[in-house]
Image (cartoon, rainbow, N blue to C red; front, side):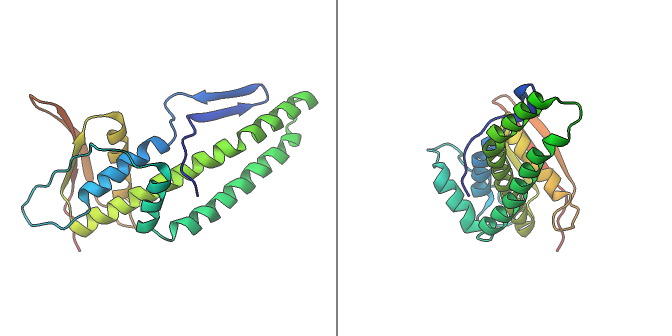
Length: 202
């Protein structure tokens, strides 16, 4: 299980390969999500507000995967099992090109070749996606364990995306439904993203 940047969502056809704007690889959110996890993962005293400095040297991808695996040792096996299913699906997709009645033989050949070229790209993109969403689940586990009421972060696209993912996971985490509200707070110094979490029971 390797963590590596690929790129935006691919669009593959018999006429070429292109990429969809706005559908970036989940890779770009993994390290910021890990920083957020580190910021909330500690002992808490009632009534105390905690802050965390997210600056500092970024750890490399191998070290980052190892840190996540320490939190979820079973992730490696489940990820590998899921990736085998994805590889099988992609192989089947390549085989089914012959069934396309709208393509002539040359177009089928090109389409197959394009799918083959992009297979590793797509598998890696799915790997990054699996790791990202597992990390989101880990963060939500911590939120529930410590009954956190609010998380705020710097205002940028990546943290907005991460907090949206957390919000979605809170609404359906282990068959629980915990409401939350995502908003921004403007003050004289900067803009912050605030995720306010409804009361968490037992």
